[in-house]
Amino acid sequence: MKGSESFSLRRENRILIVQWVYMCEATQTKADGDTLLSICNIFGKDPKNFQFAREIVSLLQKNLIEIDALIDRFATNWNFSRISLVDLCIIRLGICELLYRNDIPPIVAINEAIELGKMFSGENSKAFINGILDRVMSTLSRSLRTAS
Image (cartoon, rainbow, N blue to C red; front, side):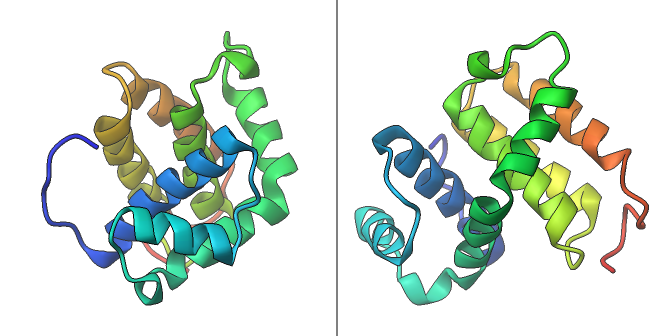
């Protein structure tokens, strides 16, 4: 992770989600309570502070087929298999927040995903992440700047 700034607990949860999902994808391991404990231990985090991460990862697992179908649909001129694993984790998180967390304004979900892209991925990834998430956001019928 680039930089060592202090983050809000919600941002720390999102960072941990990307790390957790990346680890599970890379090792073909199920993202469950045991792997959350492992990733918290690796990064010296107290698992009690990561209920939001548990909720999001549960939503990701439950809705992965729908989320991946949206990525495939909106990643124009990109073959799904060419998307880097870290970008894929970030985009999945962003779409999950857009579709299944009405308590998070869509603009916030996208901004957070872009910040994660800046932390974990390459120079051009923020535009790629933003492009896909903007397309998904355009399909929503709720307020873009406020929580429902």
